[in-house]
Length: 119
Length: 84
Image 1 (cartoon, chains in turn green, orange):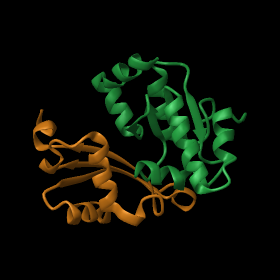
Image 2 (tube, helix red, strand yellow; image 1 turned 90 degrees about the vertical axis):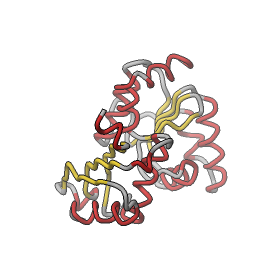
Image 3 (cartoon, chains in turn cyan, brown; image 1 turned 45 degrees about the vertical axis):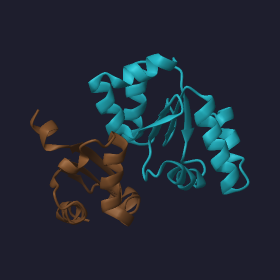
Image 4 (cartoon, chains in turn brown, blue; image 1 turned 90 degrees about the horizontal axis):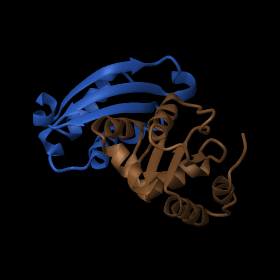
């Protein structure tokens, strides 16, 4: 699996503070970011696959960050969002939640609204 | 962790909540931790965002999250929403 520029920036962090900054930068600079196990083509967990699938209904292009390649990412991410599990989906800098919430938002039409507003 | 313990933990932290564990999967417990699906109905969720409702449930489960428990699917509703 190829490492994206966004991922490289995060994995290259030399301290937790640096990683936190890189994560926040990734969230700020990209319309849609999904922190997940695996990537879009090969999700390594059913919940990550579900989040990707829901987002993909409305937009093909989004960033993913594989949390399995660097075990620090999950810890730092949990610190940032106060959320203990992955996937974690961000749209327009806003933390939407995990797969349950994203699927609920899809069912309610809210996910489409959020994504249409940025993509 | 058994489903009864999951619902007890949530109920002890959220006394007004009705908790139902609707799904339980221990198949990959050794590698991954168990999976649960829970429906939590509480009027305490009124006015809370989806994210905050889920955080409240995660907080009730405490340290087990990410450890013994790999994932919890959460449906968090108020009584009105659950009936609606």
